[in-house]
Length: 457
Image 1: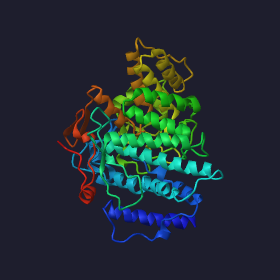
Image 2: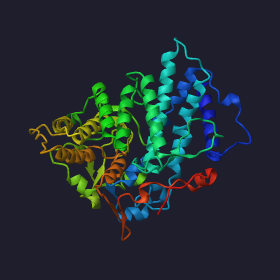
Image 3: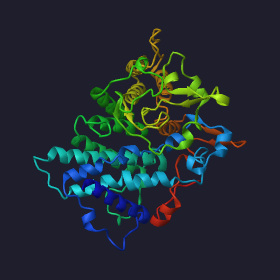
Image 4: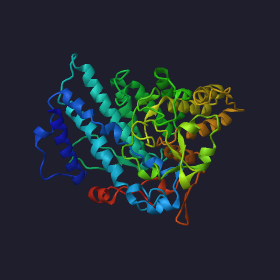
């Protein structure tokens, strides 16, 4: 019964793709296909793996953690992400937009709409609240990911910058209009704070959000907004609930270094549509990034594998925190390592050097070869500590789809980072705050909805 309901719901979703946010439909779907009969039916919708599996790897494809050889780029197709590699100014990502609005946002909206048809009672309150909290979390996570791609980074112009369409209902006749960046982040934060009051302390599996996962996502979101007070606050709350780290000395290098649900995973989120140009045998880790790891830093051998044959001397990423699925896969999982880095950065920005270094060293001790004494990281000032934390942040969070967001916020702070690609005997540059740091929306969506496009000049 539940499976048939989900199949029918998928068909309605496909109709939503085809009709995409038009102001009206000539014919409404039959009501018996859209109305669940119980809270168990709503929970069944939220058990759909698409909600945690189809996250976007586009931020990693745009970032500077990897490169491809010219011959690889020439042989790649558009489906492999060929044109994303050098930030082609005219190429939108239809797939990313469609996945989020027709699956990861639509399903939670169905649940939230239908919850209004069920009365909350003392007997069902826990299930009712958990379902609502999960739906809000999934939707907020989707909105946040879309904002990293289709909006300018959060800044002092957020009240006027173009945000994303905030679809908060499954009603397909509701017009799609672009909110502002401020409204976008207000919605994300609002959904998460509401979810925080509804979700349990723990969940049965890491694919299900709980309070700790909400703390982690709030920290990530506030960090992207450069609200370092709140980013630190929620990283701290997250770590108070879950602070386990993997001692990399206990991890075997072959064939799958990391398990899917390892002890660092607070909330599991995978990029099931990982852009193939990132993976083996195409993507190679940036040479300078690889060389920045100390030989006693176990991440160097657990995260990367040397290529063979004529490619000896270059390295590919094989350290995914979903190694059981794809050793080169991109994950969006919220982990304790990320939270230690978030809190350390926020401490440093607040002038609390010793606390910042304590968090950094806690992490790094678990990454260091214990056959030699661990050389604690020191700093002469909070600013010096911050620089060292940011170096380790990049080295720790490879293929986590976070580098793109970090680069955007760093450039707002005046770091003036320009990305460079050498492709087909031509050099491509992405200067700080260039319009191409924001993706285009597909022409089909623009034409159907009349919403404004992201500028390219």
